[in-house]
Length: 363
Image 1 (tube, rainbow, N blue to C red):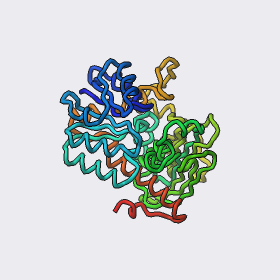
Image 2: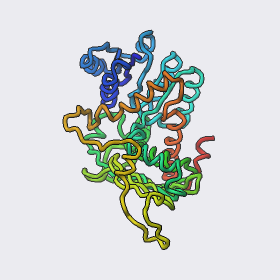
Image 3: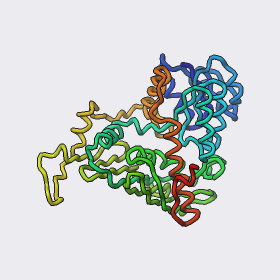
Image 4: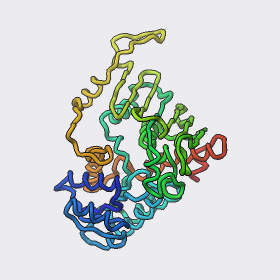
């Protein structure tokens, strides 16, 4: 399948690198950007054509798939245009910044009969796959709570590097919408549909941005499980993202995309009646049982802004399989909308200083 990348910025370079890593199943045909020099630079790197507009790309009969790597608030516009032109679409996170825009993409996908996927590559990590399977199979018993924690740093220079960064109009939010969305997506994948949220958000460590650099929220899920979201780009460098999942029969912790703790009562040798149970960490055994060998870090892996091509490769491969097999990919537009709805709910709760029911936003 032949691909076009729309948007030749940081994430566009990652998409291009990922597509080329999947040859011969995937091949990059053209790169487009509103800044001609940027499109030409990335196109020249991969020996492909450069274009200056979406329209120019969509008019090409040799393009099967379009990946959307524009600023977040422009995602739906590009995706809808591509789907209406008969192209399959991969949309970099977030799906867009409003639920109305997300619904436009969903309607366009249904209209076109083409496949659309939202990037959430960490669902494909071995740690995430093992935890999701454990939850689905009831190995942790009743899920009672979870945490999504993202303690990152973004300098003032990061926000100043693009006019769209840190704006409500095009970035759609700050620490949660742009960075924390991956961690939040994993929590919703593990814990299910969020139904109510109460949140606080503020800009505490940056200047010249409209959005939050720090947010905390409590979430109630349809199952009754409770969750806590903490996201910040104002934590001095060196910390990681974490996702905790807790049930009455087991727990798991994912730290920096690795399974660092896993304990299921069904795998324990002893039954502790009074709650002082074994704290044996079964993470390595759980990964091995699922067929995942220990992952060695590759020091020579080419990166773009800290992302390796393989960060997206498994998800892009799933997309190719989905198109060929005529099945939905793992991360559908509907799944991307669910995660977006929770983030929008957090923002609305912080704005109104009260609890927000998610269904009120999605009617």
